[in-house]
Image (cartoon, rainbow, N blue to C red; front, side, top):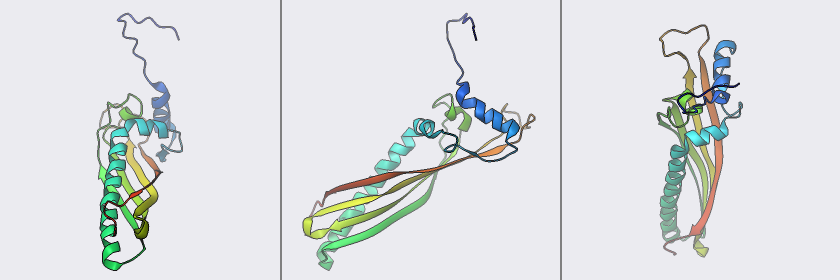
Amino acid sequence: MVYWDMLGLEFKWETQEYAPFIQHYYHGEGSEFDLIAEGYLDSIYRVFSPEISAWREEVKSRIATRVQTLSRKCKTEGRDVLHENMELRGIQLTPDVTWRGLGLGYILGSTSFFEGFVVDIEVLCCYCVFNYSGELKFSITDAFKHPLDFPIEVGGTPYPITAKWSESISGTGRLSSCP
C-alpha cells in the first residue's frame, strides 16, 4: 500500500494486533478468545510489565518475611530442617492499560488482572540457609464488546477475552540470624 503522509506524522495502526479481535467479533460467535493460545504472551508482558514486576517483588518480600519467622522457629523448636508451603490466589487489580501500547493495551482498556503464587520454602537451620521454588500465577478476564463505543453491537457478537499463565520463581539465601 502506498500512501502520502501530508502532515509528516507517519502514524501506522498496529493492525496486526487489532485484526484478530475484530475478526473474532464478527466470526467467533461469542466464543472465548484465549490470549495465550493466540500468541499474545509477549504483548501481555509488555502491557502489564509494571504489575508483573511489582508482584514479583511483593512475593519475594513475603517469602523473606516468612523465612525469618521460620528461622526463629528453628531456635524455639530445635529443628534442623523446616518446610512450608505458601499460597495466595485471587488478588485482583483493575489497571487501565489503554495507552500502554496501541495494540493489546488499547483492546483491553480497563481489565481485570489477577495474581497469585504457590511457593515451597525449605529452611536448613543447621546450615543457616534457605531456598524456595514455586510459581507466580497470573490471569486476565475481559470482554470485547461495543467496538465503536456505542451501547449497541454493530453486527458482531461480544465475547470473553481470557489468559492464564504462570512463571517459575526460585531463590536461595542465608538466614539473617542463625541459631
